[in-house]
Length: 211
Image 1 (cartoon, rainbow, N blue to C red):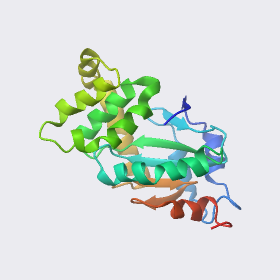
Image 2: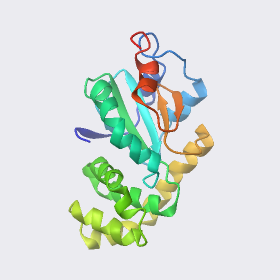
Image 3: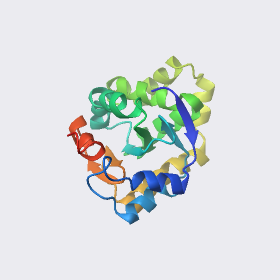
């Protein structure tokens, strides 16, 4: 991922984007869902694409989720090219770790600062090389060190209790406020898509008149 900017959610702007209709939305988002998505987050959103794009795609993902990795390999490039790179939508990935290993991986991505989504991309691309091994933490360290993170910074990041609490809070807020139970879960202009979806499902919401 590239051209990233840290962006604390602006409630009014995000709500307007999520409630977009006409050419952008075939199904109206529920007001309660819009409010929950636009609420302040424990960790700041990292926005890919134009922050003022007329549509918003939010994904709740876990770095140890094989379906999430498959989406980012096979479908995300298509969604990115058609909607994000063209300025039609912005994309936000929010942390929804399904296990302690995923929590740690998300912490490390956050500790990478502006390279947060680049680290996430790498961890999805190489998921089998760290998450599915007998020594996942050892291989996770190898992945992060390949991005330039030192062993000292790796250990310090995983010892950051305040950051861990925020990652856990992201999970709790999505579970309680939006009913998210599994990954990936998407909200496209506030309309929910569960599971690994193809480009056609995004088209049905973002470009229904052309679908």
